[in-house]
View (cartoon, rainbow, N blue to C red):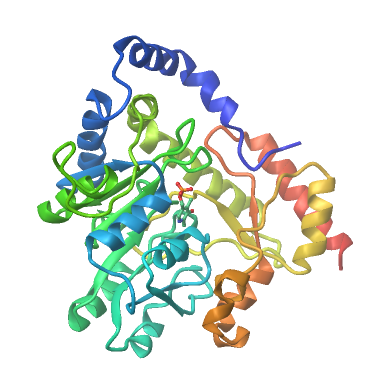
Length: 369
Ligand SMILES: *Cc1c(COP(=O)(O)O)cnc(C)c1O
């Protein structure tokens, strides 16, 4: 079986370093909001070229706390994409706001900036672009729309640590950038973890208070907050891993290029599109194929751990039934949901494995015709 991701191979390379860092935390007696948290926040902010970073328990909390810190809630509308993981809109729902879906660009899978403005109403407060699969959104167009309509921008960069748009790191364009360190992400920890980045000091301070029971000073509480801290063990693990991220992203990119090469003469496999002047980090390598469901089933039966991200677009999920959005109102989203398949992708994937994946995929497509 060639898995979609094999975390054990990374552990085999840097396990000793990780074990040392974890033991040090265990021996220190300081397990929450200690030295590793502080240092990792500084290191991550520096990596993202933002002034501040606030470490949290998950990417979902990063999105939710960003909305809270921007005072977005009941009666407000937030424009985003339906072609993403549910956490993006879950956060909008948690604060009592309403998600409004713009269709995607069919080549990049990301929110189509040209579909945003027609959705803006007096209730619209923010845009949440999602850098899906590690592919940057068109941030200059999105920031321009936000500026002209006085909207906030919260980037969902949960799949895109290190991706760049026109030489600038994603997450550093908007009012907030949100990151996840869930184990399968391109910078994954060994539990849950997340991060907010921002250049605004008052937003940073508000997020710091919200993550720790709504108060900046211990036992003095100004508002209803949450318990969403990154524990010291996870912070220590992430501090070991962060210096490797560019190397790992480069390996993903090289693997993507090799897949492209393997599929070059196969018209049935539509390989990923990269926009000009972007750095994609290939959190996923996602292609479009005919007879997707049948091919997917056969691929898995033949030992290739391919996945469907995501099988149901968010406007068709039961949780969003109350919004009454017609399925065909987002044609590119619906069409791509039926075509996409993500192939094994991680830095340690070998050329031989990629050859097997590509050959098996092409054989399965032929067999399903
Ligand atoms: C993983 C993910 C999240 C949520 O992150 P968690 O750390 O699992 O809460 C949000 N948005 C996107 C696009 C994601 O891929």
